[in-house]
Length: 323
Image 1 (cartoon, one colour):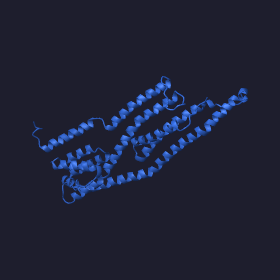
Image 2: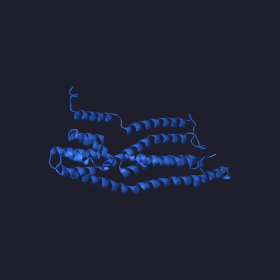
Image 3: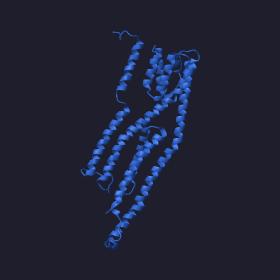
Image 4: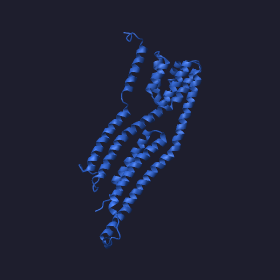
């Protein structure tokens, strides 16, 4: 009964809090994507295991031996299904967060300027909400509407933090809330927070620019590695097989004095394929961590390297078989 007779602004705040809590209780979209990708990956890995033990005899490329080769192919496909959707989804989320946080210092500066004219913090937020702040604009307008309904500024800031749960927004809201509760000149606090936030963003952008060179080096070294494998598989290893077969069929083989272990060349090629997979995943994760400091960003680079490396090894590098 008390809820029914409560003011409209209070009922609106309660409904907003219920909506936010419901969103937080459910799984995040990226977590659902990771779980779905992992299930598909497990299915591919089961098929790869059946390929390895000889139960299935499916090949991705005509002329290649069965067994380990298609098993590794299914392992790669499963790994791609697991890391690719999650990596790209998380990268998109991180980029959206960066765009949201990009205009936050401008909003804080506008609120501080409005506060210097004698306005209270709620009034200053309402006045500043008329500006344009990119992806942050809609959330600021929601917060201003709540303040116009009579919602306390601490509650409106908390709801804003829950709608935009980024580390920077959480830190700013905590500082502003404490400054408003302590009293004093909130405009000076907002100005300092805006300045520190902008400095942190500029420092992050400078770090990304400096790390971009290392990311480029990682990509170049990975593709040089693939080209080196291609040259060995197209020129050196076939000559080794031919020379070994010639020695085996000559009179030198019968005397027991000369022999070439050319039968291990396909195994060497399989080792090259595994090396490409390991390098793609490791180098991709390293590139993402260096550039953005985020593991999820590395999964995006790992997906690109792994897909390109696997396609090159399976469909461009010559197959090495020993007849």
